[in-house]
Image (cartoon, rainbow, N blue to C red; front, side):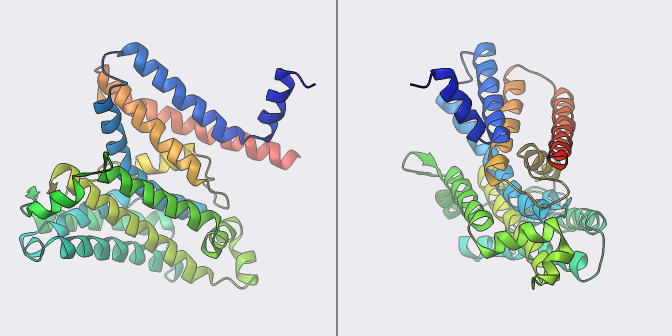
Length: 324
């Protein structure tokens, strides 16, 4: 009869080492949070706060996973969130009701993402430059529309729809769960996901295999923009306002979560489950720092160190794979 250590060894050999390591890191952060603030960390209110904060950046990270898996990068996600939130909360838009507010945000987000995709795919603009230009333009347009003023949501129906609970769970968390599940299925169980992996792994081979690489690239960026629009709706629901400052540093947090989750920056491999764990790790880390009154600059230093460590680990795994 096999011993317990041998059974654990076989289980570890079958397990995804990256995902298992991320789970262990998340558990370790929870332990640290409980030990440092036993009166606050594991309370129902704090857990709900962590999940609500993770929801918006998590939705953005789902779209970022597709972009990076396809071999691209998107620096404009935070600005698209800001522009979508501002456009959906203008007096003119709010006068038409909740449906038009939501539709406006979705159209603005998807439109900005599609512009990014067209510039990259058909304009042959480097993704870094194309999305950098969108980052500046979208943030500037958001400031122009709002006059650099916070636009408060006046329609009570919006709060009733998005700020309530469903089966005791906040609606924002349900939205995140649905978007994540849809993203996981799309990446792992559909032709679109397989084409995304192929385009990111080797665009020329994908083209020779019959994939319209340009069209697919444009669609991937449009999908990322749509995720930004959904995140904007969630941010407006949480803060009851639209502002040009919404989404600040979302690009950093999203890229960090995706890279931590095991998605290759060079493209060709993506993990939606890893992205989810990356989002939870960064949100939990920020929450632990906040509860212990650490300043924001310390949090940013820690995030930067984690990103560098994740990239170094990725490089080590690639070298091992090539050696094998």
